[in-house]
Length: 402
Image 1: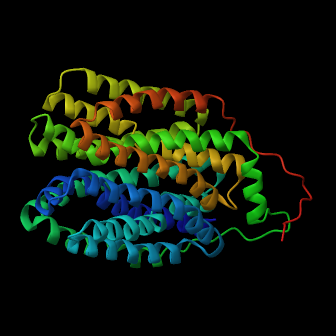
Image 2: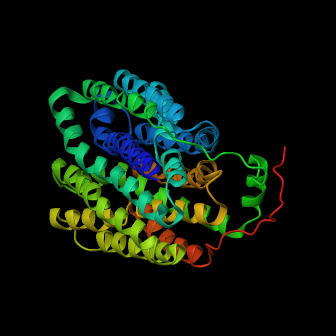
Image 3: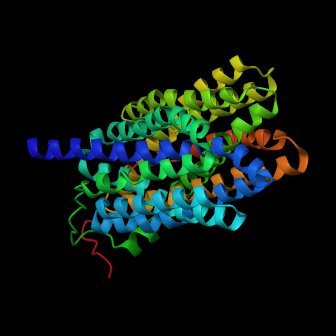
């Protein structure tokens, strides 16, 4: 028992470090929008499209990297993802064309993120801990991603001011390379295959026929739309409203800081109360916070208050959403099924970040996208209210399909 407990704690620690690096580096990408677009003569849509493509590729690759992690363990997947992430940052720092930006920030970093973030890491954690501790453990690891966002953002801003955008991205690539040895040390133990286990095809068919699974997917689309639009475009929105550059970076840092507490609290509460109902209230709260930020007078103080409030609600969806998948379908194919749900998150991310850039270039403001984010909060709250987290019933003698 002690050996299993030590293994679980080590896996949680290493997984937390990997997610801290992956999410922390990504959280600072919005700071590069203005300097890269200005120096290279791009409109904001070029940068926004590359990051939108990144999120889309991350999402489409996630079910496949999740399935590989379910089958072979997380170590190889995370190490390979770390290599792609580092190469993506390297080539992003050398990019001078829209195509180069899309291939580096879009393709390579998108693939790297699919191997180093939530679906793969939380799948490994979900298999390693007891069911009654699963929601809390997922909350801890998700909170680590939030800590990375908070801790690394000032460093990213410092590198940007000291070295310029190109060399700063090269330095960030060196940091990303640290995920390779950390990932290699992840001794994830995929669940031993039993005769009664569903095959991969059987698990897909089961999820496809479950109404709650699709409601969860649609709800996670809203999460992606909101957080990536805000993460990428908030600094530019504040700067465009005559607030100093440091206000945007400080606001994003506050998002990361308070996300730590919000994500941990969500994981804890998910072990006590209905996770779908918690998600409904969370999305309603998001909509209220965004509405207050957009429609009340804007100032540095209101921006900081927004960072605090939205930070508490930022990644709180992650342990609750993955916890529902684990509770309903079990952990045998958790990374893969979680990856499918996450795909919808990333389609939402693509839509939010690209639509923000396109509409800004067309109209010179983000008004329509802010209003969409508020309406989508209400829709997500309704969707989650009708999800049941009761474990799915399977025939005891069900044989694994070939």
